Picture 1: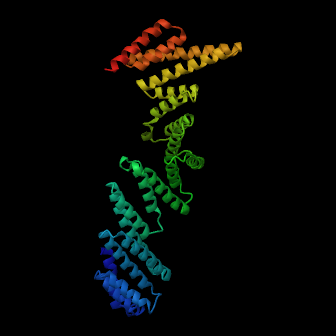
Picture 2: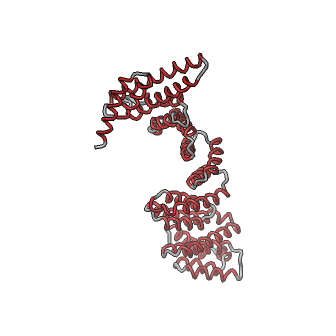
Picture 3: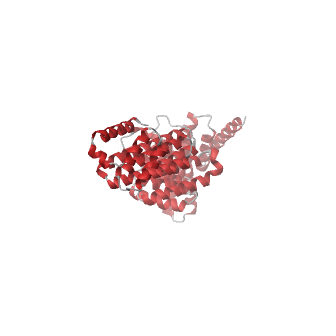
Length: 407
């Protein structure tokens, strides 16, 4: 028995002895039940209180101590791993506590809340310990008991849903992935019925739907959340990931740039570490053949390059490739255009982009003479400009480096 409860029982027994008026208000059956609880004979305490209900069923003391007895019985059942019995006793305890409060809120509201919280926290603590050790079945059992102990709190149901989401990502549960996600979705919908505006739960639901391949439904939720929480970078990352699954690379790139903008505008230095990589990814997607947003690609790749004292191979490679692709794209438009003014503009711009690709390619191959891809795009850019001799030399270097890497 907890120290708090023991002191409470002891003090109440002293009151029974010392204050005759109170003794007159409490039935003999309840007084006996208190003594049985003190002796840890909880079944007997339940029995005598129910016997007392045959004479009087509106005594708040009786219901409070009936709840206490059920609480102790639940804890005993947990100790013996009899979870169904524990669940039943926690439910009975909750009902009895609530009846005591209904009959005398002034006396029992605070006491009942304290006891309910005690039951709830015990189970939540055990669930947390089990989850940290990946004893998922036991963790779920404790979370379900926590919900039985305090059904006013939906945190245990959320906990089970999120645990199943976590399990679905683990290789050992790969065969059960869809079932786990379906169970998580059902639990989230149960909680959302009571809290339809809960942002974090809506976000969880959207992610589960996306994981189940129900991207249209997930997208609808994301769009609603975006209108209300457009500065939440976690939400934006989730939306970008969904866009990637849908192969909507332009949308994914737009959200990556938006995230970087938000990261750079706040005062938290810790969230800037991924900015460069996100810009490079965005630039790569913008310049891809399905998007062809070359100006946007160049802008974000230049931003990424400006974040580096010594530009990395990856950033330089994405830049030379983007300028080459843009130059070639403009050259194709030049060839197809019939208007002389527009044709001249396409020619000027394509030459500028290809010359820029050569400049970056030269810098990259000087800095990283063993990187074959640098020589490849340098060669292609020179060939488009008509510098065939230089293109041939660099293409041979590309082939030599590739052959060397095969050994």
